[in-house]
Amino acid sequence: EDKVVQSPLSLVVHEGDTVTLNCSYEVTNFRSLLWYKQEKKAPTFLFMLTSSGIEKKSGRLSSILDKKELFSILNITATQTGDSAVYLCAVDQNSGYALNFGKGTSLLVTP
Amino acid sequence: DGGITQSPKYLFRKEGQNVTLSCEQNLNHDAMYWYRQDPGQGLRLIYYSQIVNDFQKGDIAEGYSVSREKKESFPLTVTSAQKNPTAFYLCASRMTGIGEKLFFGSGTQLSVL
Image (cartoon, rainbow over all chains, first blue to last red):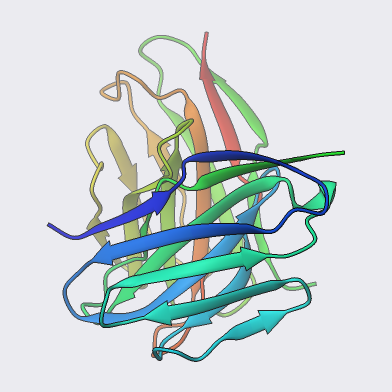
């Protein structure tokens, strides 16, 4: 059975801390892994990863994929209260099916 | 502006009633999806459609129905057979092809009276 597992499920940090969110997967016909941020309603796209070892970076956020060990991490440095959100990991497969989502990590950044 | 429009934002359903959630996109995307989100459960796929007049069941299709008569529109009906419909419903779309990301609407919160 295909599965995407995120950890931790929730996290509370202080402003300025660095956090690492994890996403492991076991799927057939892996095509890509995507990260989304969901603050209130609509998830917004952060990164798409297809190749191992190549870091994607956007400001204080970065992500990397390990296709051998079947996981990805999302790093957020110097966290701000505006980073508080649910972070969703999803895997796209060659089967033409929809994205397979993990349960998400709820991040709360306190002042 | 291009995007995905879901309506209504909030919807209340009475016992035994069918309700329909609207999803319209003007991104010219081929594929459209409906996800259900419960607290702590992530997104679970209800139905998806990759082309007009064709759609497939997702992991939790029971108690739901869809249609895809136009490329832009993919309405979801929550039938009375769905015994626990209270949830947040997200519509999404994307082009079909390698490396195409998913775009989301703002969601509909459905509650049972």
